[in-house]
Length: 387
Image (cartoon, rainbow, N blue to C red; front, side):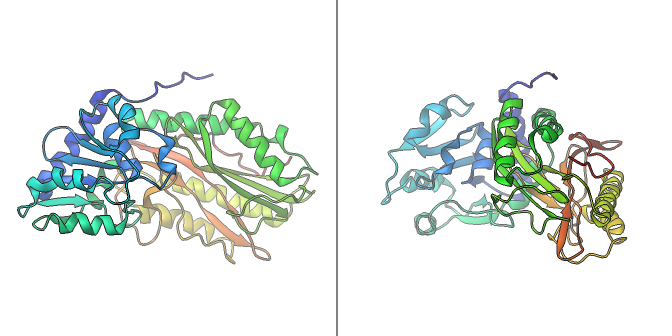
């Protein structure tokens, strides 16, 4: 079994991320960044907890123009935060609906309320994660503060991964790859799809995954019809096409890819769909090079998909970024002209529709290197496997 990476990151990793952010802030004229969401707080601090699943308490991290970030958090998180590189930790007893950290946050930002500009995530794929009433109250108490959209700044930082991040994602991919290799021993004709899901989760945990927050798929005769429904009690039957798509995590980093199988036998249309998608992925692998764009990758894959008439299955894009979140920027779509650079971690996810409303999806995870794409997943078989 390959070596298991070290958990967490050294302090130098967070110092590097903060320094890059501060250089970008100086370029954009920002006095700081106000961060309210889990990935961004973890990215700059190392604060890693499942407590974010509770919507009761807001959490704040302020990255100043110079110096270390400042945490403004509920007291329940103080001990964990003290284990990070953050030194300035300001807490309150939460939940406190009348003042959930707003007074502390106002005091922290008050020196900048003299016409200075603070960045906040406002764009696509972001959310505020604090009550809108509290946000409006905060701004009312900081009349001279201006808020700018820092989505692009954070996006540019997080899209390019460090080698330590890539190692964690690669480890998550290896765990899922080993688990997928065991699927023929787990799934069988007559087994309810719901039981296949449970058995596969157990397999991934046994292989070393920390969690499996995302597991979707489908199975039906001659092909599945959607890829996001919960599993049913319907037993697998001969002629079914089975797909499982997992987003499992290791040390807070995701893999995200799927695999397809036929149960007992495969019909010609499904074999052809699988072949088209496998070759579309090959085209995506060839196109994913520094200097190309997401649009280029999309067109390379779409050009192969066009060999087989699409009758649905349009999921809006053919892959995306990957890291601390199951899906991150950018998107492989005709509208996304993001330039591909070294150390981006991406998914290649071609899909198509065929037959009577059937769809098929194929997905791999890659890291972009100087010479092109490097697979992080164990490449799927070139022909539709039969169980």
